[in-house]
Image (tube, rainbow, N blue to C red; front, side):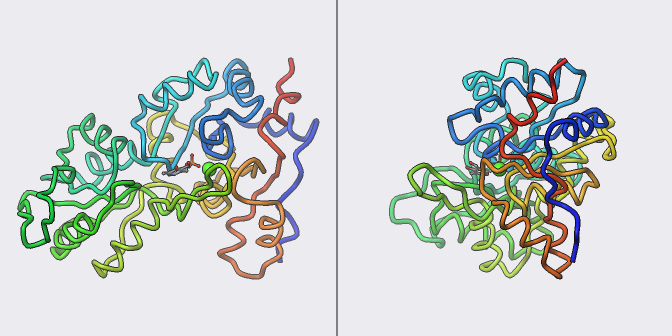
Length: 304
Ligand code: PLP
Ligand code: CA
């Protein structure tokens, strides 16, 4: 049983922590905003961190928008000094992975939306998958493209049976690469509703294809490698702030950075303490080093 973790970050302790860190990674939904509402104080925290000379990056598993769409969202929600290179999304990183790591020679069949298609296009990776279907078509009516060398599955609110079936056919070829943007299971919506996440779609396709996807997003370390490779970030001088234990906190731990759970999103203090008090080692990896109620708690520590 771990006796440490879940430390409440307050006052000088928070100031000392920020003093030792050069780089702050923020998850987006549940941390700096909830849907279309900024978390109170979050824009000021980001501005002040930057003014104090810190590197700030946003690491989101949300693949629905291209980075340019996030830039507009940051500005709409009152974040005034964010630039595109601060933003790492699972859509953008999937495109980077396909181009630079897998070096895919051919087309990618996509289950996903605008965010994924735009990022693939900007990375110069050819994508197919949103051509209109003949009404009433079955899998027998759909030509398969012999140039497809990879399948990428992410959040797709236009998912249908035929798309799953086609992806499944492409994945019969063991040389066809199988990638998922992220494994997020679901997301909270206003008024107590929830939305199934990319992970639920990836799981359906994995079951049908009898294969496991390579996952680009958190908690995998690829998004951190994208930042570290480009900006020379030192994990020892970095802190990750997130709201979901199984993605953000595990991500931070996997990348060797200190972690802060903020309680404005999905996971609760009780869940974090439950993980801390559990004997299972995979649960220990989801225990945050620190806990705050909200990122606004950083404000007093950023006073001159
Ligand atoms: N994916 C989708 C489709 C979402 O709607 C959300 C949150 O709203 C996320 C992922 C999670 O994003 P983040 O990693 O910023 O919490
Ligand atoms: Ca989140």
